[in-house]
Image 1: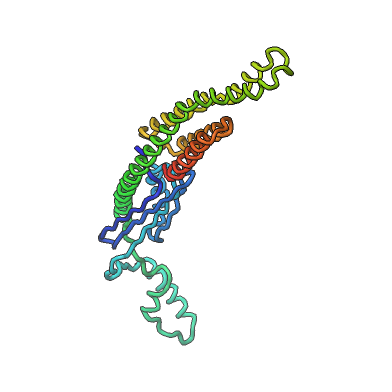
Image 2: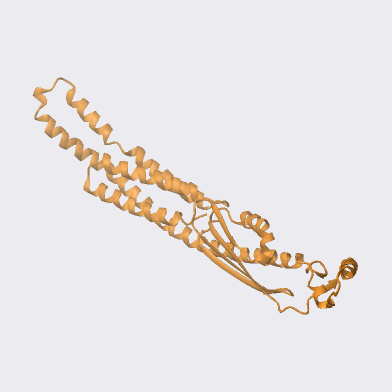
Length: 288
């Protein structure tokens, strides 16, 4: 299945702790590059988020942003540390005995002393679990979006492969006539010098030039590479790098075809081939 690396997905959910909202964005990248933005309350999720994203996506620069809007707080759950108050009372009594005119200590002042009031922190595990479940749902949406975009890329690539195949067959059909015409032209030019050449030299020169202009191998490789592209497009795995390598090979064969055969029609076909290959390469840059 072909997956695009360019996509966006978002999901939100209300919980007892407050509202959660995930936003995932991805663009093409050589490797998987995960960037996270998490609220302070959920910093502890960073490693798990990276693991979940890495399990679902293989390539791309992925930005993961989580927003958390805490619910309105009720009266804080507070408790007094009785042992701490008891120890403080003893210390205050001792200080009062040593002072000639000690001031009366207010209970509010005692409450403000460190360790007297204990705030019971809520259990955040349910919030963590809700955030991870919502992340999985958002990743489902992103993968679906990548798949839909990947289908479009696959169709575009297949269409251009069809056109490349047609051009390659046109070149293959044209080559015999071109070889014959070039051989006749060369024979005419060298025929004028036949008397000045050593016996058999004319045939050697014709054979050497014919060998330099032999592009059957390049044409066959072009056809083979196009078939390999079609085969790779059907694989159920990330194929972007493999396709990128094949685009380099296709471009190399198109250049060789143009340089070996000096013919206006073949040159035009080579230019058309390079344009199509470049168009495919641009699409391949977005494939996972």
